[in-house]
Amino acid sequence: MKIVLLIAGIIVFGTFGDLILSHTMKRIGDLSVRNARDLFSVIGRVAVAPGFFFGVACMAAAFFSLLAALSMADVSLVEPATSLSFVLNTIGAKFLLKENVDRSRWTGTLLITLGAYLLFIKY
Image (tube, rainbow, N blue to C red):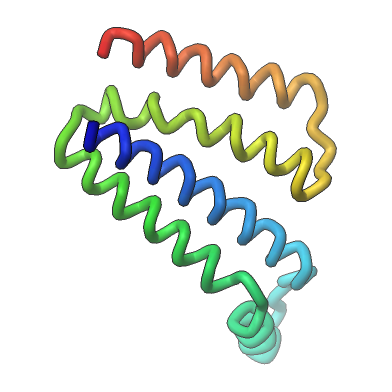
């Protein structure tokens, strides 16, 4: 049961982190760096962006959940099980971020998930 909760943590925190950071970075805009001045400007814009640190915190929570899960279970179980995040990321991209998700992206997402399920059903 503990491993299931950790895998759920990886999926949920990772998905929230991905979606929040994607939204935040799109609001910031172009991050082209041509010189040192541009670099400091980019760092400043990112550091004050709403959502940046929350997104990073979510990604950190997903990473530490992954470490804990890998300390208890085989990587051949943990990694395929976390593929559900592909589906949640795609759904979030489509409906929350309003991205264009065409049929080939949906098909690819579902094939990855099906493959992961086939690896996971043994457990």
